[in-house]
Image (cartoon, rainbow, N blue to C red):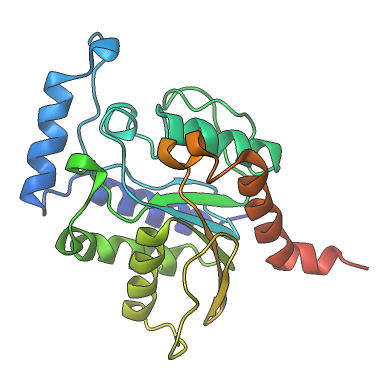
Length: 238
């Protein structure tokens, strides 16, 4: 269980993330989308701000995605919530025991995570879902601080090569002792980085899930492996 101080620190960081206006292009885009809206959501009030991390502050598993979707987290205010990628992700987390339910439609839907905490490498919805390297690097201090505050994390699951690159850079900035060479990104590829084990997964984007590049069983295998790598699993072994 996380200490109250850790919860306060994460809450303070989340508040800081929500107020960030460091990237002019992203600020303009996220706010324009929140006004224009998609027709299906025209009666809803959009979040229109950066999406902070979400989950169990005592988590052993950290999940790093790409960025909020324009009509997903940019609308709902919770990372991976309200879009097809989130539907696929949280359904898998639920099947594997990391989430209390498969639904992720709004910030008030009752979703809770156990032993997992989810963040995006870039906290604002980017045009074309493609942040620039500068925007990725500008967001990096938030991920560095999350790595420092989420003290129980042992396994980091990266969803896509962009998240893998962003995480590696953040680990270096956090002072983690990294190997000279790292494994090439691929589904279920593992890489040790200091006290962490990184597990790679294809991103649950529609492009990947609709084409079968990432199937439910493939994503489930990612969480199964992440669970096996945690100390909780090790200590339970005979």
